[in-house]
Length: 475
Image (cartoon, rainbow, N blue to C red; front, side, top):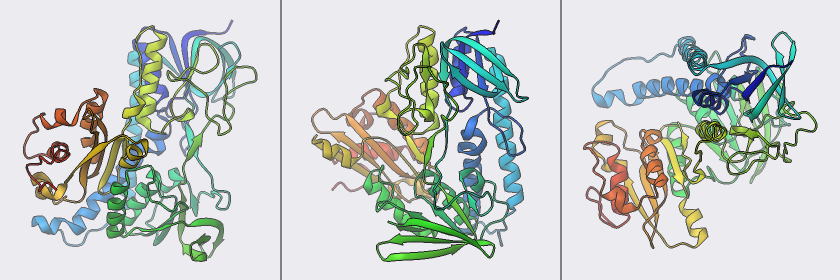
C-alpha cells in the first residue's frame, strides 16, 4: 500500500518550500519532493532562487558594488585605499558559503514544521497520486488529498546561440565564471541581464548588452527607465537596443556574434556570452496522461485566482503559472494555497506585487506605471522627489535617482510607486503596504518619517503630487 499524505508539494523552490512549511504549520501531513542538483551532483532544496538565482546573484552584486565604491566613491569620503584588487576566487567562495547556509537551513525549517523532504523527481498521476523517483532510481507511488505543483522555471534558450557551458552561458553559468572576462556580451536587457551585466562590468569586464526590443525596460515606468539608461551608460554598460542576434561562432577561445539592428548586419567578438532572454516554466515530465491539469501553449499550468488547477485538489504556484516570475510572488502563492487547503483564509493581491532590479542604483516599483494609468483614461497626478535633495542620500554619496508616485485625481488612491536610487528595494516595501491598504497620497503625506532617512523621499514625492513638497521646489 502506498504512503499517504494530506499535501504533497512537487518542487522545493521559493514557491514550493514555503507551501510545504505553511501546510506543516497548519497541522497537515506534508511531503515536499525536489530534484534540484548542484554542479557537484549533490541535492539541495531552494530551487533556482537559493541555488543559482536570487541569493548567489545578490552576493556577487554586493561584492562588486563594494569594489566599485572603493574605486569610485571612497575618496570623496576621505578614505584612501590605494590600488583595489579583485580576488574573484574569494568572492565565489563567499557566495558558495551563503548559498550552502541558506539551502541547508531549509532542512531545519522542514524539521520544525514536520515536513518530509524527499530528494528526487515527482510526477503527478491521475487521482492525486504522485510518482516519486528517488535519487537512486527507485520509484514509489504516493497518495495525497491535495497536491501543489511548484515546478519552477528554467532559462529560455536562444536557438542561434546554444549554451555550451564554457563560452555561451545561462544565468547560472554566469554566476560561476572563475576569471573576469575582458569582453562579455549579455543577450537580453531584462532584470537578469542587467544585474549580471552590472556584476561583471563593476569587476572590470567590457560589457555589451544586446536587446532585441527597441525600448529599455518596457515593463517599467518610462521616466524611470530613461533615468536607468543614463546611469547604466555612466557605469560603462553599452546597451544596444533593437539588436537581434542571429548566429554565434566559437573561434579562437571566444565567440563571434552576428546580429542585426537599424543599421543592418553587425558583428561582435567577445570572450564570453551570457544568454538572459527570460525564463520559461519547467513543466517537462511533471504530468502524466489523464491528470486533468491543463497546460497552455507556453507551458504554463492553467489556474484560477486562487491557484486552483482544472483538476480537483491540485494547485499550482510560482513560476509555472501566470504572472511575474518573482520569488516573493511564488512564496505568497504557496502560503495562500497551504492556508486554503487547511480551510483558512488565503489571498494574494496581484495589484501590489513589487519588482526590484538590484543594479546600481537599485530600481523598484509596484502598481501601475504612468503610461498604464494614462492609457486607462483615469485622471491622475504625479509626484517626483529626487534623491539629490535628500540629506541622507547626500551623506551617503548616493544622490542618483528619484521617487515617483502616481495617484488618482478623483479619490487620491495611490496607483503606482516607482523608485530608482539607493536602497530602492527596501524603500518599496512601504509603498507596497500603502497599496495593500488602498492608501491615498494624503495618507503618505500625513505619515511621519524619521529624519534624516531615505524613506523621506517617498514622503516628499507624495507631497509633491499636490505641489506641497517641503524639501524640493514645487513645479
